[in-house]
Structures are given as structure tokens and as C-alpha cells.
Length: 400
Image 1: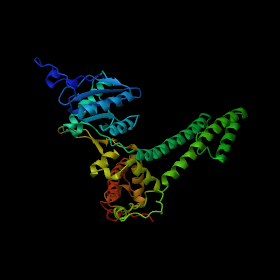
Image 2: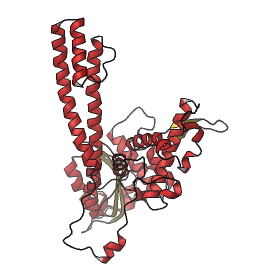
Image 3: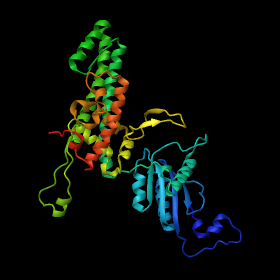
Image 4: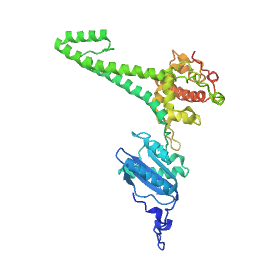
């Protein structure tokens, strides 16, 4: 892209008459360049704003040419800030731009058309640029920023998410076998992948129909069973990798005294929170110390109640689910286990009559209590992980 603005004065750029554009030997260095970028696999669509000038028309460049364009912007301005939405291409552009020296922000994806029916990449790029301008001016609500993980943190997190993928595939192939048996008139096939149960079901189908039907159903179940066994084996392998503790450091070289003083003991594992659940939470949270207060922790879980109020009318809605769905699932499972494993937990006192065994509370009320308890558990885990409190002060029992 040809850069003509650096060789023009500010008044000439605004179109004032009486000003003559002068060309100097060195380009003018601006204070700030803002970029709103809409990323795609084949091209990046971006809009640019220089200092207090207006938004320039959006343009498109291939990913490699866009990086070259960023290098030119660093030579034109003292500060270059860009923003793009998190998406299927991850944080590769963030790492590349940061390595060049560009201040790169990543925001959560959302609809940017502001109610208009006309939507395209150029409109999205201009809207991102407008929001970035308002954000830097002090409007913190203009962008919902995402914290990009380091490459090591992202690779660790991918292990847990890969496990979720194989878990879904395992359930899918089990359901596929059940669907086949349902179509054959078997109402409750149960664990059809067990050898004894599978033989019983095939004999039942053979007696009801014919040997040919039995053989065809058996062949299809064999194919599903083969894929199911592969998914189960990979799932067990990933689960063991998640539960393994970090390897100890080699003993050849003794640690320095300063390193021994700064090293902090690992937080204790709380009873009722298994090794796998703890590993999943740690990897999805990326870094417990990145949260500054309990509101940020609760917001990241997506377990905060929604609200639709205006004037005197107030309406409380279900949880907003604006957060990490994997963290939310693990916390909800742990909340159901707390009454059995942590009866002395101080957060349980409020919900004791609802969640205790034999309670006559309705199912909906029990779900609400569990969601509230899961949100409070996330905050307390953050306090324990960051050293703000101890499990004993919260009434939590440490695992042996």
C-alpha cells in the first residue's frame, strides 16, 4: 500500500486551502497509528487512523504482506496499536505483531454490524478501529479483551481440550451403536460394547429377524466398536498425561539461594477435587494470578446471573455464560460433590437445607444452589491458589 500521508502536513491532509504539500528527505514521524483488523486465512482487512485524523478507507492484504505493512507503520509512528477478534486462527497474528514491536490487542468475537443489514469485512474493520479509539480514550467497555496465552500455556491447554474432543467422540460412537439397536427394536441396549451384552443383543436380533440381519448388524457394530476402542485408548492416554506431575529438576546443579527463597510451595489439593479436575482447571485458567479481584474470577466462569431491568421493572435471568464453558462444566461437577466431601465448607451453610441429603427442595432450587456454589468455589480456589487464604480458613479439608 502506498503511504502518502506521511509526506503531507496535517492541514493539507484535512483539505485546507492555501497549504502546499511539501516533500522532505525523511518522512514525518507521527505519535499514534491505530489499526482495526478483520482476519481471514487468505487476507487481512484493516482500517487505519493516524493521530487525530479521520479513519482511512479499509484495505486488504495477504497475511505476509500485512506483516510487512506493520513494519512500515513502526517507522512512521512512535506507537502502533492494533486490535483483532479472537477466532479460528488463534493468537499467531498476536505473537507475530508483538515480536515486531506492535501493541496488539485481542478482543472477544461479537456482532459488529450495530443492527445494520449490510455486513462485510471492511465494515467490521472500521468498527473495530472505532472501538479501539474509544478504548484508548478511556472507555474500558468499548472492547472485551482476551488475554492471549503464551505458546507453552496454549500447548498445555490443548492437551485438556484434545481430551474433551476424544470424550465427545467416544460418546458419539456409543450413541451410534445404541441408535442402530433401537432401529432393530431393542429398547434398552445398555452397554452394548461389552462382549457378553453384545452377544446377547445379537442373539436377540437373530431370533427376532434372521441370521442375515444378525450378521449385518454385527458387522456394523464391529466397525463402531473398533472406532470406539481407538477413542477410548487415546482418551486414557491423554488422561494419564494430564494427571502426571511435572518432572523434578535434575540434581546435578544445586539451586541458588535466591531461587530457593523465591520458590513457593505448591498449593495443597483439596479433598473432593481430583487430580484430573485440578489439572483441567489450572490449564483452562492459564494463570490464577492474572485475576485482580473476585469479580473477574466469577465473570470468567460465566456463572454470574443475568438481568433484564429497566426503571421499576426488574427481571433476573439465568446465568450469562459469558466465560469459559470448560471451566464452568468442571466447577458445576465439583459443586455437586461438595456436600459429600466437604461438609464443613463455609459456603455450604447458606445452602445446607437445600443440598443436604433428604431435602425436600425442588429440583430447580437445587440447580440454582449448585450454580451459586460453583461460582463461590471458583473465587475461593482463586484465593487459595494465589495465597490470599488457606483451605482451613474456608472450612475445606486437604486431601491426604
